[in-house]
Image 1: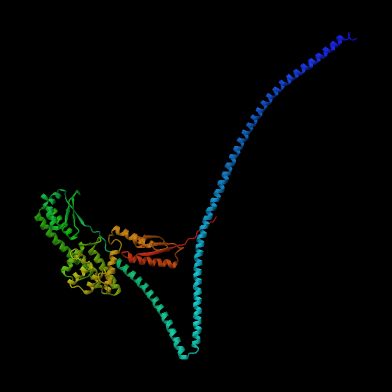
Image 2: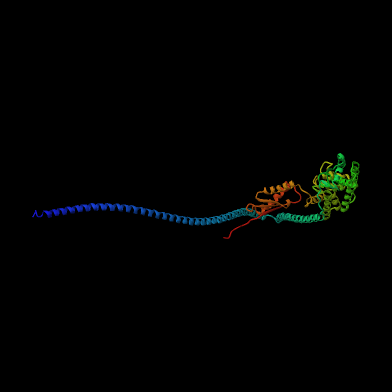
Length: 518
């Protein structure tokens, strides 16, 4: 059995070995396959991992972009809302500031009113105390009177009645004085305005040169003469400078003495007409011109006296009056000014019942001293009074002339009339030229005085210095204080500033309350 079974056993063994080999080979192949498969999976997993990471990064980027866009949109939205809120806050702050200002003003008014109420309460308390004291005094007086006789009581009552009547009488006198003063002021205004309207003499600007026209420029050489002898002779005889320049067909005569300038003008015109210009002819025509000018001044004086209906003047006094035609004062012709003053004095004197002739005569002669002021030292009013005294004028006229600029104290009604008439003529609009520097300094002085008062907010000088308008702070200055400010400023201006006429002081106190409807 065993021997016969050997091939079978071998077969079995071989089979087993084959099976084991196949199993081993299978295991080896399986292991190999498993290793190969695992490597592919690792690669797959690695690749998949990379893909997933890329997808995650892409998704993160998208989310980041989306979040950034959302953040920017949200930021813009929030900024818009912030600006709207900020605008609302600013408007609210503005309204609150305005309301705060209004409240501050109202609080200031309330505090001022509280102060006034407190002061009124103090006044009432003091008044109450005074009344209590008087009540006790009256009770004591009554107790005393109760023990008096009839005659003693009557005497006490009569004394008290007399004292009360005296007090009432004093009040009545003051009231009547105020009324009379007001009526007198109104009457004076009407009187002065009528006087000014009745004698509006035209104003003519006076200069220090005269221009003489020439037929041709050839005459300029003849006027000069050989080696300048003609012009030297002319200037020596007349006391006037001849200015020969490039002005065509004209020469200029210059002198501060209008009479000399008039003599020179007439003499030069005669020489031009005559054509023979040499020293002898110049001397002849200058003498003729002097005689003519002397006749002119006498005629001017006669015309002025006839116009004013004045008589009894000597020839020498007439010459002095006529010379005023060729004199000026601040650019105003002296004779015209004197005639104007005479007219105004005439009207004032007739209205108040004074001597019209004396007033007119004094008005005409009040500035006569200016004719001789360049030759005699001293104030022209004093010089004029001395001249009139020499010619035997009335003492009242002499004193009025001497006092019209307060060189002596005014004592008579005539003195006051001449002062008023002279001031009216000199200060009316257009009567005199005023130095620009003086004018500006006066304006500055007025503004400085007005601004120096406490409580004044602004000050303006208007109407060429005839009015000062002042705006005060209404919170600081009351109605009574505003009146006091106008009085104080007027007083300071009178003391510190030199000015013509009258300056009006206007104090403006204004309170405005402003609110807003929202």
